[in-house]
Length: 291
Image 1 (cartoon, rainbow, N blue to C red):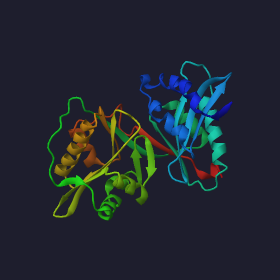
Image 2: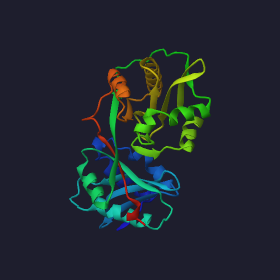
Image 3: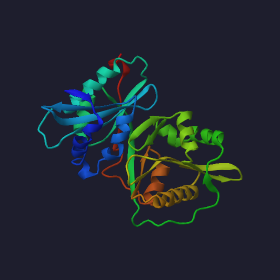
Image 4: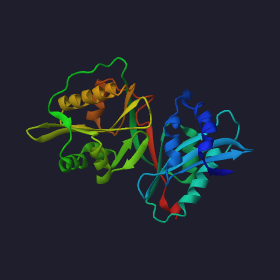
């Protein structure tokens, strides 16, 4: 049986989550949010009144769908959990004629997820390189006074929309492992929450950084980073490091497009891949499958 998850299901959901990623799953941070989401679908699969697995369908915009949080109890030898939940979501999506995209992300070696979703018809549309910097041995440092919270939205918008970072990311912005289609409205959200910083000289923007408030409690996430030269990159990164340290985060993470200049800067600052380059995969479902 598949049904929507209710508040009283929290205990079995978190029990499964405690077995994922060595107990470091983000589900405890988002359970209440997913339950209260009036548009999303947080659903679980039960067999003999035992929760076997679950997943979440989220509306990033009124027409853009994001699939996430697909989990199965690793202690139970039950097959087809992901497939059953995925078909459940596809059936829901077929009832909405206004959908413009259905996407999800995964790590390159998550073979079970990749096999399942490619079987359903999902196509790989973007590779990014996931990078991580541990902050335990990284110190805060003074940054240049030219680096401030962005105040001129129109100029920031022009800079971001003309950037190599956005172009090479195929007009996507990552907020953690959730990937949003870029829009002026999305940028405005970052701006209104004072999550955009710019480095300016003589009233000319030389670099911009954007960070996201993500659901992973120990992670500080960089969503956008571009600068005119290595000096400005260094100032922006140091500012972000200071901010992350102030927020008591343990790691800084970013998904990099194939942008050699930025990759070189991140390597200089000791950002590392978990296993390899091009390890973050974005998939999209051809709309004819649900029309």
